[in-house]
Image 1 (cartoon, rainbow, N blue to C red):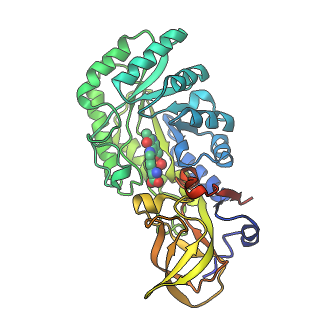
Image 2 (image 1 turned 180 degrees about the vertical axis):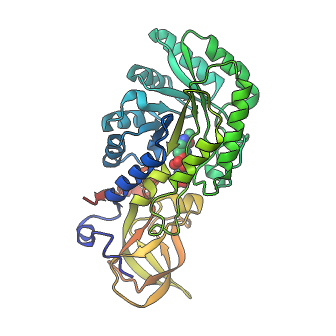
Image 3 (image 1 turned 180 degrees about the horizontal axis):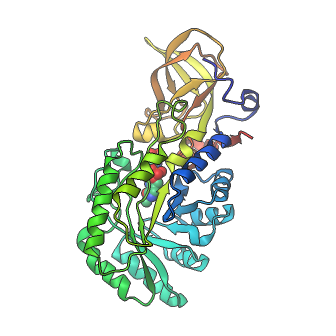
Amino acid sequence: MTNTTYFPIDKLKESETPLYYYDLHLLDETLQAVKEASSYPNFHVHYAVKANSNPEILQRIAAAGLGADTVSLGEIKAAVTAGFPAPKIVFAGVGKTDEEIITGLQYGIGCFNVESKEELGIIEELAASLGIKAPVALRVNPEIDAHTHHYITTGLAENKFGISMTMLEETVDKCVKSEHLDFRGFHFHIGSQITDLTPYKILCERINVLQEQFKDIEIPLINVGGGLGIDYDNPEKNPIPDFKTYFEIFHDHLKLRPGQQVHFELGRAIVAQCGSLITKVVYVKEGIGKKFVIVDGGMTALIRPALYQAHHKIENITSSSEIEEKYDVVGPICESSDVFGTDEVLPITKRGDLLALRSAGAYGEIMASGYNCRPLPGSVFSR
Ligand code: LLP
């Protein structure tokens, strides 16, 4: 059915497709929900910039008072430009370059989330050359299966992320003894699009054991990463994730020391539901026993279906037909994986109709590419 109430159809019809449409009211409501659910005095949420770094989105998140979790100098700069104060920016990633580390130190960012002892050595050297102390948290690989897609699970021993438990003691020791490292605590991240929250309880238990193991060391903060999933099947029913249950798990299960801070790095849960990819039907092609809806935005505009076999709910937002049909919805890119959905039930769909791929605000626009020399999608906002 035509979704005329949610989307500003006239504005979208005038705009060049494919484009990302962002519902800023929903973003604001989501931010409000995050703030309320995380309003324990020692909890601090950093938005994972990698999910979406559209300046309009970043500015709103900065204005809401969240910190920023970044993974490159480009993201640090985008966060600073959007108004995130440097002390509220953390910097993770397995391959930080010297330039990125030096610039991060010069900005005075809040913490480097360190992924290896090799990286720690370089940070120490560079901090020494600047005559300062670098704030560092050690990313620990907790070896927890987050039961999500294998490309987005990160906390297993076979993954490239973090420092293994067996090397932790010597690495902490190096931090504590160094004149140029300020040991802030431990960092974890077990994966993304986590909908069964049990792995978070296991994470809390692991953290409690670790705190016991390092009971003689001062640990100002624990960073539990991000990963809270969203409901891709029912964006209308569940536009805002259950932040309350998520934060309560950490509040109830972590055995914190007095004054200890807990950092969270949520990306998808904050921005996914407010964004939709809007794409125009170029052809409706008769195949053998099926019909293809060929749209102007493919895997270059939204790569998640091709890369992770992800499914985004598809709506025809301009058809007024009461009759439904089944279609395979595909993009124009010369790759067989350029498919958004098979046997999608849509109202009778015609050339020129607009389709919305819902829940695309996270890892959508930011992962767009210029493959096949296609232009990057633009963006339109609700006001
Ligand atoms: N912290 C760290 C260290 C991370 O690696 C990530 C995501 C996050 C936080 C934020 O996770 P979130 O709350 O958004 O789940 N492109 C994939 C997701 C990759 C996630 C990478 N790391 C997708 O489209 O599903």
